[in-house]
Length: 434
Image (cartoon, rainbow, N blue to C red; front, top):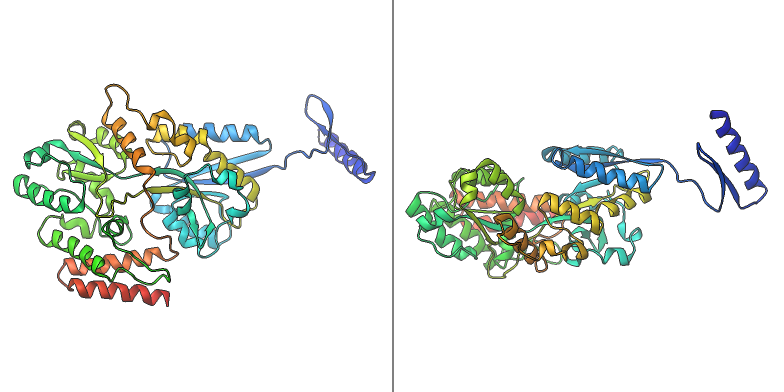
């Protein structure tokens, strides 16, 4: 077989040298001639995802098998990285110029590396007609300075998951829909049940939900020059809102030390009445706390006077140093096409980011005898057209969050006045941008 291959290569070069248009190709069964076709170049690409094994192992094995069968000579090596390890691993790989070819990240973290030119320029690789198949407001989340660095994948919009028994015990007949109503409910729930209304984290390295609440309350975080804009009357009012809740004992002490996962733990334990989270956690609650799940229902997410709704985006990026840019882009578009997004969204209880997949009746219509998960899916999808990534895409977004959260914590603990905390946070941020 080896000698035969050498002979085939010799024939090819001889024919090219004679300027013919015939290329000899062969398989183990026959030999055929084809005009102006080159056998596909073999390539192995590495695809990193975040904590999707083992739940979705079968899905990705089938997806990768389909892609490989449609792209002969191409192999995909799938590597699943624990959520907590992804940032360090991809930073190390990018710095060493040994990155994977396709990576599942989120716009907040990916934008930090986009500012360092770590990702492939997708505007030069993806035609407008393909780009327009994705939700425009979601595609925008993976752009910085007008350039696209990522392809949208799956989405979630926050829901209000609430314990009907606890709200009933507190004499609350209407689920809070605004932060003002949430504060009022928190007081009643604490007084009547001894429980907390909800948990939200102020840990700088964790969820950006508090910053999103600022935007929903009407705060502009940064101006067009990237300087602090939250040192405004609206910004001070938002600081004051959270400081008051904490000082009145209406927030658990752990909000200063525990991340968003603790919010799920408290809700499952029946210690909080409201969980602001994605619908994907309903299955987890049902499995871990069946009694709590039985008394749970869902409503649209809580917002501020702006009425803005958040969306959390998972995207796919292509490192600039990939050795197979075209194949990597082709695979990323395959993962995120209409058919594959719809299939994954149904399995994972998330939302797709393409217009066609989202228009499927699965996201529009409630079945007979709809479950809480069914209701959550339809409510979540209905929020998506108006939803947006509320926090700005900044290469140093983590520094902005750290400055605000740390100074907000100081005010909550009485170490600073609200006014001082706001001004200190603004100064710290501005120093990083000067």
